[in-house]
Image (cartoon, rainbow, N blue to C red; front, side):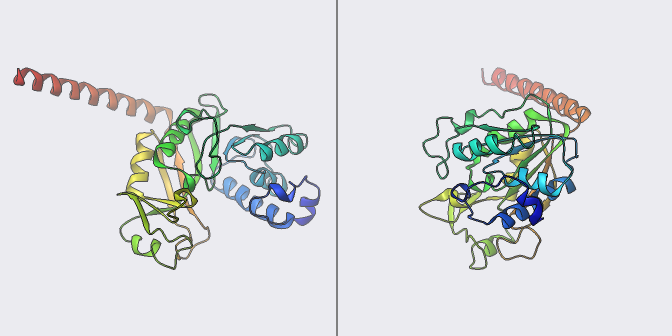
Length: 279
């Protein structure tokens, strides 16, 4: 793996948020890339990487897998995206990078793009697989809901999204507030949201699992699996909680749309009857 890293461009240290060396960078990127392949990314597929940063995942795809499909990454960090464009696209012309100046209180407070108005750099139904690592752990609920809507827009029917979160339920709540947690979630934003740092809520933010499920369903997606991470002291093989999402197939989409239409008609009928009675 190290010899492969030497053959690839490496981002300058000042761009590396984690300050890892080349070997650690390629090792972590390769781990993420192989996870993507294990969870359904095809070697010739189309991948949208939400939060491409300084190229951890694309470096891992190039160093540790046979991926030769289309990669599209975007990030809020201008310098990191510029490096990826200049250094990785010449090596892999099927890898493209975009800068979107999304506002985020922690990572891009002066951003010019409202997070509720972000449009992913992909056409409707054009993406096989989405990767989103350590993004929703720094997002407020409304921003997540919008991004989930963008998942639905760009994914092909049956397409998947590999995402990471901090989630909890009643049984897990004491643990995430304890010293066993890397980020003790001792502050309450609302009834379904907790965070670690009183001065920086987006340093690490956790959502109740029931809320996550309702947000996913409202976006027209479905949860495939939830694998709990080790972040709050539980055993496991990953740090953050891994949630695999899927856009339902075309038939299920049509059924869902039809049921929604029927539900709205029933609601309108009930409301009309109530209005007549009250008059």
